[in-house]
Image (cartoon, rainbow, N blue to C red; front, side, top):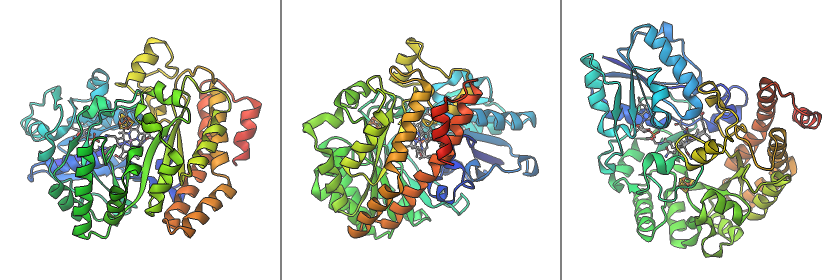
Length: 469
Ligand code: B12
Ligand code: SF4
């Protein structure tokens, strides 16, 4: 029995266009969901994982599979439907799962043979068994997995050529920020995989550099932190010789022992969601956690960096409190905090989030020709109606923010300080130039995005975009 597991591309996502910038190789990450599914698949199945982000294959030239499984974030849904249609025309049953299938079940059901909602662990072998007997159900509800029964992902299956491997050690988040799908999808309970399972799986990752995909590797409570310390001790003791990056909340900075252990275990950088430079913004997004204890963000960032770890900061533009000038303001604040990289995204109502419910009820979802418009739900296009910013206006803010932070002088200053403080100067250099390179690609995408709406850009914006050429 032959099984294809497919990760569809989104041709609009600049970060996955490997050929447009060689720096992008460092931003194409392995589709861990499919590696996990492969780990759940009984041995009688011959599995091929297809990651279209490395280039879509010539499907007609490939051997006919018996079943196709497709994963998709919302932004990949359109391409997922194209791939599904191709295989269904051949009479091959197509099963789709993942976050979009879970949040938009009815839409997906119209386009595939079977939909799996939730985390696949409890149900996937049954789905394959049903497929083998030609009695696939239209819908399977998998719910949440028992975290200590998650088998290791198949790290041996994907082509080489990725800069980073991927692994997951926890699922779920109690914080339920308004814009984020994680609490709705993985639940509010922070579930931790047994440390021995994680260490064993880490050993099977082929790449030297690894992305730990957890939404918050260290959690929020003292018992979470204690577990994170145990995990780091175990990783250090296993002497894996891997360098890894992860996502964490800002409380990562509050515990010197935690920082020292993380660095010793191979952590070289953390991605932290600062989200808004203003306390009212954090309240608006429900990210009150960032407000606790009258936090000094600059000091927190410095504490992490002193352990030779990079800090990438993420902010969102387009909040109800954001007014013209917010782009420059974010760049300034990111500089003040001293982050090594800045990642700014448009506030985007993703299906299943609190923000989606709110914006939909207020009639503020501007790009709503679904499913076609899902391709814009990459957080790199403004898809909503923003309170104080027009569409052109918010694009301008984004460009000015990135041009400001990623000016050549800014990059040289940051990389110089990374070099001086022995904090991964090479990764910092690659990261900074990768973002700078993407700005040019993004500008071209904005022009197409607005033209396509029958909205040629204003002269000012057109001029700004041209400056990026
Ligand atoms: C790693 C990651 C990335 C990596 C992607 C790596 C990759 N190719 O998979 C990178 C950094 C590239 C990335 C990019 C983006 N991401 Co992202 N990302 C994640 C993150 C943190 C972890 C994903 C992961 O690997 N999880 C571990 C695996 C094991 O879990 P899983 O994917 O959910 O798979 C399970 C189930 O979903 C199900 N399942 C999944 N697929 C299938 C298929 C079948 C057939 C079946 C039966 C079951 C099934 O079973 C799996 C095992 O339980 C999630 C948050 C999260 N907790 O999921 C956000 C998340 C998926 N990302 C999100 C977003 C918005 C994006 C971006 C659009 C924007 C951005 N800039 O971040 C881009 C889009 C990229 C694109 N191609 O269009 C949102 C998606 C929401 C949505 N509705 O789509 C999430 C949920 C975060 C959030 N804050 O809401 N992301
Ligand atoms: S943004 Fe981070 S902290 Fe907020 S709900 Fe999502 S995963 Fe949790």
